[in-house]
Image 1 (cartoon, rainbow over the protein chains, first blue to last red):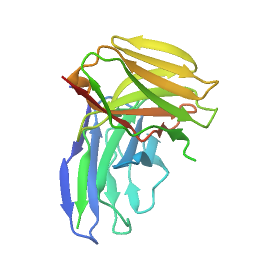
Image 2: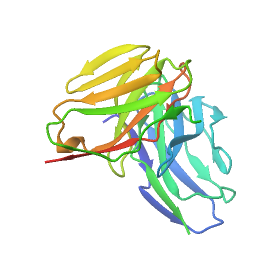
Image 3: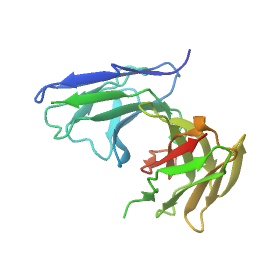
Image 4: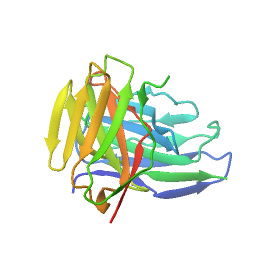
Length: 111
Length: 110
């Protein structure tokens, strides 16, 4: 089965802790993306990567970090510097930006 | 002003109705126009994409782009309760990143 997996589905952390969200794809897509979704705000781009070992900041990169060491994997770290980390995080992949395929998402709650 | 505007709804219609979902945009450089469907607590699913102006049909779904008015629409014919979801429009200037609308929540009641 080809697709995008994100784990875990739900994640709870204490304030001040860094947390890493996993994203893996077996679609052989070159590009991968991380979005954040908050109620009433749609999807906002955090980081994206078009090739291995290269990535670019999106619109809301502050407080987040990523790596792209393998084509299949694009983990996102939410650092303690992110002021409002509680959100629904979505990973996507594509060969062209207008045809992105999304994973099931990770709901992160920080208390 | 946001680059892409979308009415959040909710839009509530009876089963079998024709649904019209719309987005407006301000950037005339957008060339690709997409519609995604998102069920509650799930990732968005790509429904259709259109390049430049015109119509595109896929089963009960029709996407329409009017670049002169900077207006795009998604029509759903014979709506079903299973169509109840949030519909997101998205746009792209080229092969770079997407700009999303905030989504319209649709409820189709039996």
